[in-house]
View (cartoon, rainbow, N blue to C red):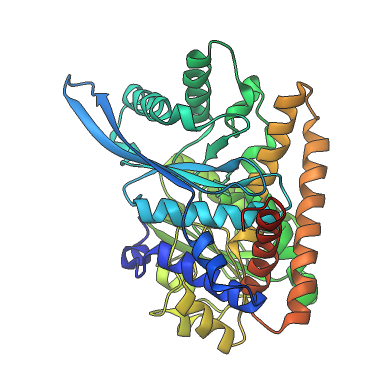
Length: 420
Ligand code: GLU
């Protein structure tokens, strides 16, 4: 994991609850609404047995948290990581509720995870783990119930196993039960690029309001997985200058700008961005503290926290990851005039693409990749403008502005359904 992430200062569930509290107060809602939204509707915990290649049986703990379904079936990814805990999964499911509401998708929020280091498993063991986990939660998922997708260390192959396991159980193929599938099973090519593309579009929209445009602006990207790489690539194509990137082994910096594709090639061939020769090596902590126009944390939770927030010099932070800036850091950054574009807006491209895939699967007719990409772009631009317009009027930080719009929508649905 990233060096600075070892700090993991706060429980993400506390973070999520604090953020909800702030939105409930800002909207002037009654206390009981906070109490209702604080709790997930259901959390499923499963013990997953896997017969390993050496013949021994290992047991892993897994969860699926279904936070709120007022606006539609639960929707959100499943991650495989040693950092996974029940608190983390609940927090992430709550963030999905707000993300889906903000993007005006017909979904509630859910998230799942298995506590495992997938790099230690063979492909065969990983397949068994994926199938056994999905079988264990299968009565709680479904095309109109709960629709998982990829997240940290899961991918289209994992989704193919989930889809197959579930379809075997039903006795017929159910394409819409998971999104982020391979294209041959009704997935979309753009699902891979969608979160990074969304981060880039949101950054560009915000830069046009706050920084006089994205052209020539300097960018630092922390985390060079799917989200970080594509965000860097698209921002570079938009005319921005990506000066620094990092992965779990460290970072690189070149004030003249890096070529994101070359860096990606190095990472693929030689294991890490730090092996890229045309740049100076820096640490992850140094990357976060660079004087750049935009800083994009695209790895995991809590990397910008009360320990380092005072040293952040970027003008704008765009949250490619879920929850990379803690509540305490939010306050410090706000006082220092640094704008944080929140995760529920900035990284919503992934779930927006998931929705296009799910609609395709249900209708049984495929949009072309071009049409899908156009639809994705339009949706993200609209969401960003909606949040920025409201934020400019509201005199609070952008997270609170985005949360307020999202919470308001969920509460309206709960009221009209007669839940509250
Ligand atoms: N895991 C992604 C997220 O955190 C995507 C979820 C989805 O597509 O359902 O937004």
